[in-house]
Image 1 (cartoon, rainbow, N blue to C red):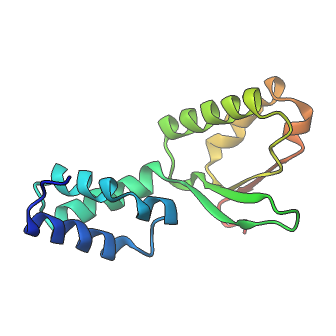
Image 2 (cartoon, one colour; image 1 turned 90 degrees about the vertical axis):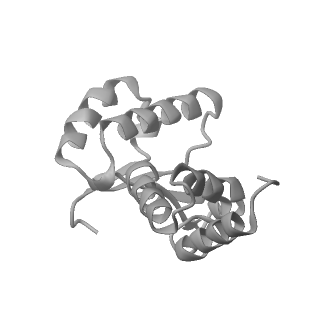
Length: 144
């Protein structure tokens, strides 16, 4: 990235400026994120922005919301935009989290859960510890 031309740097900075209100602070710190999307579209700003926004909608359904009254981070999973592959990734992350950080989980809130999620959750429920099941809150479309 050090060898970017002035024009390429302008595209990367403009891409960041256009998406500044839609990305997490951590994502905004990652200059390589904007560079990768810009380079993937030959530094065409409109195409790079469209590609980044499509990525955000499809693969970034997780967002940091705030801290609760106990100081725990509140992450909200908007599964209304997620496909089966994203759900598999979330399940894998959740399993890894449970295996490596016992009792670190405070609450899971899932909003806009698609209809098939209830079916999927019913399959997963028997393998989840009861302490985890009690921490999960699921809201369907239009519930919040």
